[in-house]
Image (cartoon, rainbow, N blue to C red; front, side, top):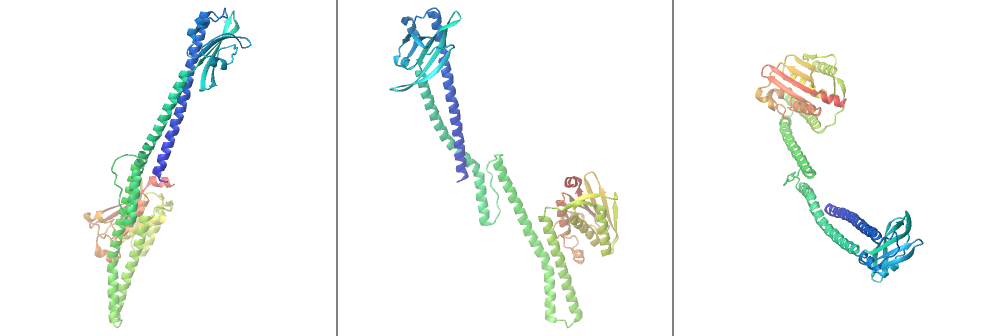
Length: 459
């Protein structure tokens, strides 16, 4: 069953139930109020009759005097103890014959249904005790056919039935309109998804009206998701294009020297060794580039961090010793406190720090300084070198994939142009950032910012 049909049925059924419940309350409230009004009218008539006829002193009912008190089809009678009728005046003998007399000690009202040839009829009977010298000697009984009530009840029922039927029809129409209104953006989304499935091309939902409700929010969220998907697809295309371009050169070199060896063989040992060395060098560069590709893909796709509390001074000290030993360079570590605790993914943070120090090693020949500081909002790791620096117009491009400031020097040092992009992704996962400042011919400062708030939340 379609959702629109379900909504239509449910709204119609609910409104119908509400209408029936309201009609029942209205009907019984009307009957109660109307009967109470009839009761009060008969009680008032009985009290007037007792006073004017002085029934507390006499038991006589003078017919000519009582007739004005008879309304429609009714009866008036005096009942002695033992429920014996002493006097009765009526213009509806059939009704009075159906109602048995009853002596009462206090006033009561009673509704009775009597059966006649032409159907059922409602009778209202009130009984009022007649007191004399503080004693109840007899009771006055007045009965009356509720013909007006029957008519009013029939009219009310017909009106309620008609209004309920009309309400049900309007509810069905309203439910259909409401279901179509609700389902329109959902249907648009379904159609858009089907188009995407068939064509394989992401597309957004066209929002025609600003309704500012949950459905519009759902459509906006869908469009935002499609926007991110398009952005990721574009990044994927760019990545493939850049990677293909970067791999093309070393593969061309390898193929060229391999062809050279195939043509000339290894008769010239020096020539052959040079070709083999070149092939090995380019293969190594491809291997490093592939590892960088995997690192970049991992930092872009992964969002879960294996965070733990670690001492930044100890971590940076170990990194400095390892790189200093491997590259035979002076790396000096400076820290504001003997112990600086942070909460982070140790392997990824270590990778980001190594990328900055590795860049400093590649593009400088002097010492390298690493500073660890803490301010009000962040823990800062700064790597400073005194090398060639970066031209000011190049600063905005250094985080782009495969971008290298000095391409000739990068080829000599084995740079791929992916390091800072990986470091940026790692810091983004830690809700931090990377900042680079440089002056050409003076040196470069690279800073990693780890927010304190993130550390506290993780702790």
